[in-house]
Amino acid sequence: MYYASQKAFPEGFLWGASTSAYQAEGAWDQDGKSPSIIDMYEHPKQYADFKSASDHYHRYKEDIRLFAEMGLKAYRFSVAWTRILPDGTGRVNQAGIRHYHDVIQECRKYGIEPIVTMYHFDLPYCLEEKGGWGSRETVEAFVEYARVLFTNYGGEVTYWLTINEQNTMILHPGAIGLPKDGKIPSKKELYQQNHHLMLAQARAMKLCHELCPEGRIGPALNLTAMYPETCRPEDSIAAHNWEVIRCWNFADVPVFGWYHPLAWRYLQDRELAPEIKEGDKECLAGARPDFMAMNYYSTATIAASRGDASDVSARAGDQQIMLGEEGVYRAAENPYVAKTKYGWVIDPSGFRYTLRKVYERYHLPILITENGIGAPDRLENGQVHDNYRIDFIRQHLSAMRLAITDGVEVIGYCPWAALDVVSTHQGYQKRYGFLYVDRDEFDLKEMRRIKKDSYFWYQKVIADNGASL
Image 1 (cartoon, rainbow, N blue to C red):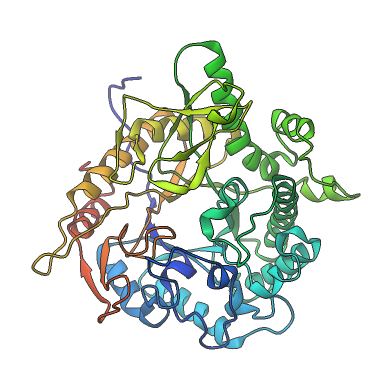
Image 2: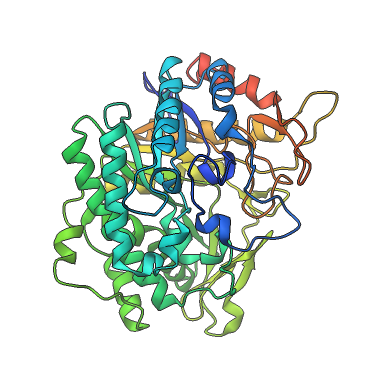
């Protein structure tokens, strides 16, 4: 749709950027922190581990000052559960409490809104040894953890994100590393874990509304529109299958209180449906998220299943993630989109399309919590010229402005990432940040922070509230 004029970005728009604890902090065993599953799982040996990461734990003051110089209005980061409750439950680690209090206060000093992710893939390993998300005891542990966060930070934090990319954890469990025995849970076990995550999330949302009356809370999902490969009806059905199973089923539960009907039939038909105990439906009902947080990187194109093993293929550039399911859908190519060096689709129009679909379905304000392009940035004469990142973000911001003009309520944009962090799959070979962290895969150097060209470009965008796009 073409418009005579476009809407401006809203007044008070949350121009921000994002990180996660395990990818940025380092200090993996300091000040009382216990190991998480990220610390204990197997990761590709040719890439950096997460023990030092970008040393954000020790350098947060410098980093937040640099974020403020860039003009950030918001900083989305995650709390490491293992710093707060090293045993998963029980004893509270005061050093961890102080650290995140200091981070939040440092943000507030510069007028930066802290957006806190409660859980970003890093379950305490001691809970994993007791069954992890496969155990209902972990639901109780998460609620206890949530209570500690809300009690300590509820007066300082307005925006809370419950669980980052729950759909990625369930659909692509190997993406965050492999257990020591290399065994990935079965699909039946994964959907039981998913149910427990849903229960934990619903209870945390209700607890937030009870303890933090001024707070706002929502899920943070990886959401993307699906295109049918052709106008063949079977391709459209397959695209809808995958959109429901991959996206709407994970968003419907917190918003509507129960599973998407098509997804529930899929789970029942394949004997994957989780055990539902007395009180579960009541628990899921009435969670009332205040907004929908959305991570968007690319769209996907889908073709009808051929009903055999050829339906399954590795995602381009990422052998840890398999796409397609026999009898459900198969991945297809889209000749109308560009791709990154790593094979990820670049589709700003798909961003607008996804925003429209999400808002139409849920009628909730949308906060973009991840969007960005990974690239092997190069430091040359003390500078990083990342015009590809500027182009990527400019195109996506322009598409987002069109979505706002379409009537979508978008309250903020926090691209990935505020500074270079450890890529889960490609270490420091694949960088996303506005700030370059001068370290190699295994040589930490001094970890000097260097402003990339994109830093200065985003600074100007924020300064004029996106008017110059």
